[in-house]
Amino acid sequence: MAEMNDTPDPLKADPLKAAAETEAAMGAPGTAGFGSDEAARPRPKDKRGAVVDALLELAAEHRWEDISITDVAHRAGVSLSEFRDHFPSKGAVLGAYSRMIDKLVLEGTTSDLFGEPAKERLFDVLMRRLDAMAPHREALRGIMEWARRDPVSAAALNQVALNSMRFMLEAADISAEGAVGTVKLQGLVLAWARILDVWLNDDDPAFARTMAALDRELTRGEKLVARVEDVNRLTAPLRSLARGLFNQTRMRSPSRPKGSWDEEGPLDPEERRTHTM
Image (cartoon, rainbow, N blue to C red; front, side):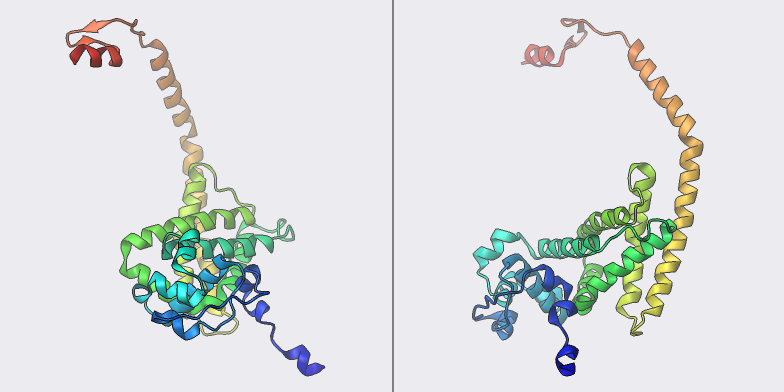
């Protein structure tokens, strides 16, 4: 019995597979590319999850640019038509992976830390995100290397990260609304990229370097947000005055009656168009 209890549970080892319903196999024989050597592997009944899993496996083994959609489809045990039903590109599969990780983190969020400072709450949320990503660390290493080689793709991944970090802030009960919220959000995305660089090269089982980097980045971000909030508070009266002057100017501007003309013809855009035809 002790030996049975010590057997690792594959679902616990990979929480993404637990989220993707792994109760049934659907492998189909692959015939070409990188996908053929793993075709017999059991796949989730959920084909979206199977495609995400397959892409991550291939990204851990090969350069991103060398992986084709056909390779991913073969590895996932789906047809190209089925792949297209779910995703328009490999990048869209990465977006789905990011949403899966978001879901795992959000489902594990409780109110236990809501009495703690904002930095501690966010620290906990981001550490849980790293835990959820741990089974795919090699794949993520290759993906980040690809993003460094391709600035256009890096910009697209930045948008994916913005969407995820918005929910991470919400999970930590930190507002991401308004001008200050925008600064928080983009600042967190940049900090997250630096944290991932450390995490991907942290061989310590306790991830001491990663936690130190996370603490350092959040401390730096906290100071930056405090300065931005000070500026926002100090300039609030000036912004209110500017809005008031603008509204008064609009109210005082004389309205031009329909049918008015100037030296070029009617002032009404539609009348001017027909007049000049």
